[in-house]
Image 1 (tube, rainbow, N blue to C red):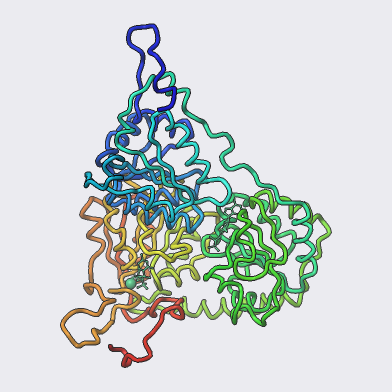
Image 2: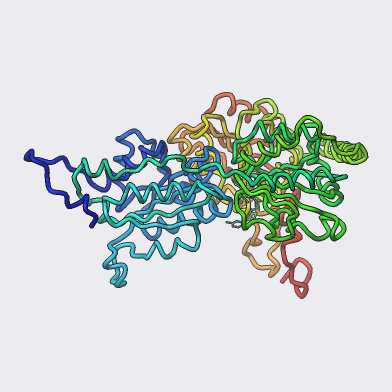
Length: 581
Ligand code: ADP
Ligand code: TPW
Ligand code: MG
């Protein structure tokens, strides 16, 4: 045990004491943690209770994965680690999915789990909820720590916070054995053991020569393109990013969660000509976006002729450079510092890109926008994705501060294309893994962290992964309007059992299900709509009132396509009979 814990009692008869529970709460408060997302139980019930008693907002969920997703997106929205608190083994494992997802997406998060007796766990003697949680967590997160002595709680939490937010943000696991929480020590020594983390995510300035190199490459471009990723949204360098785009005049494409960093209606947005600009650009500057599967790894057909591209990459993680293709000009540092340096280098005499390039993009955009407009103009009955999304596009246009949460397959892909975003960090979705189940956790945390109204547009399958949290949304009275795009299934609602047997097709749900009644069951508002007008009225009412609402929007079961826009990634058996086994 460290010396602080065995300090002799002071002169007065009853030395003031503290314990692990209090030290954890005090350490979190000292570091500005205002909210904890979790599920209570042995051994952390009293920890949550004490946190609540001392002014931290403790949001109890129905499943740890949703609490974890809430914490992760809180981290994305605030740049401070979102905290998720769970019980041992099963609760920990439920939360671990969200921790791994946070790490994959570079969101700062701390999963704090209670754990069983080390002595018993390590001898595998079958303790209550026995598991070597630290070992399980380690490969799935950025850092993992365990605290064994009350006097080390301050340091443990300081390390967790720093690991989560510094450098490339990510998920951190903090293991708190039950015995630690009950450990008693002198209160004054306890207070002194706490650490307030100074400058948890220090600025990382790019090397001046890397900035000069990047500007040289950019200056020599005939057909430059900027790609903004969710790292750029996370960085909260909104004004400088906008200034860099506008001063250089370079067309840009936002990745999904970077939509709204500049308004999607910005004249330099090339989103509506995405395939053209990816294929034809000669220099691409990535800002907080990785060349992973979402960008076809920076090579292949989508990127035009082999060797036609030079990349500039701005990222805080040096090892991201050359991960998939050669990066001609790596700029390593935090995006705020890097973009500010680039902006200084651009100066006031920058030549905009050749008109041949920007005119070609504008022409392509106009073509695609007109095509989209005709699809959006149709009034399909039953509703297809576009007729329903036209309405939701208008809802967000009228309320640009609202936060949009989006998951599903077709529901995701079509909504991303149709719903314009106008402000930074307003679009939250399935991220790098394309994971289902972020919906209600993200929606709850978005409402709590920002105080804004939330519109969650979710497929009926996607919704099912976190649907029980409508109770949580009702319980805390959160201003969340959930629109379930109900097409009776995964991708489509007209699947056929290839065996001809009585079981439904594997992609099918109960036809005509009434998800709206789930919200009503907990005192929220339910609505069942079959037309765009009904949908608009119901969403407007929800967004105006801020009452927890679930709108069951009936979508044509035949409107979707398998796997949405990424059917190309879905392997198909060449040996199976068409439509069958
Ligand atoms: P998207 O999915 O939008 O393309 P990714 O998640 O692939 O975005 O990429 C985000 C990138 O942003 C990561 O490589 C991460 O290291 C980087 N990043 C995150 N925060 C910062 C920051 N503050 N400064 C610089 N880079 C950052
Ligand atoms: C954790 C696989 C990708 S998309 C999807 C599943 C199950 C649901 C699509 O149906 P939905 O949308 O939501 O009704 P729509 O409009 O196309 O009908 N498990 C996890 N993550 C993923 N991505 C899957 C499964 C999947
Ligand atoms: Mg569906």
